[in-house]
Length: 227
Image (cartoon, rainbow, N blue to C red):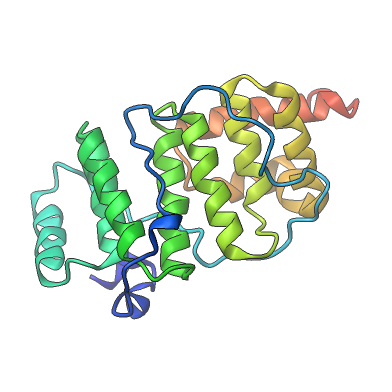
């Protein structure tokens, strides 16, 4: 079962109730409130080179794999405040089309995680991906804003993920600006096609396709064209 948590179970025993001020009331069904403003967004001028060990995808489970699902459910009965397991279950529910229940799981994971902890950032970060893949780019950005703020530094995932979200929302100019920040911070990862492909090997096909389009737009913006 340790693979289900990417090494985060060691922190799961230390959960406390999170303060109400840190909670977000977003749900996967679209409580994004339309266009998002610029206030509070990470600067495209900063240098994002800090690692973040909370920025990890939950181990994927096939909703049709009854044994794996039962094991996860058993774990949650034993330790209902296990944040990584709750996040993993939220993804399972989302893959089953149960969007409202998935949102409840994410919100619960955020609420019971220790305020400001790696586990809480992990929940916010995964929640952002879930929202992005549910076509709620505004909601994804809000979750990632919180995850970045809780990190307290300049996590290296910020510019590429914000670039991806803004690209999918239709704000291509801002998306390219964030992508330029990603390349400036880690050129071998985001400024090189092979590096980019390696960095996104765990992304979905749709995510990769969107980033390929963004990568092409970035190259065009600096006069490189195709490669």
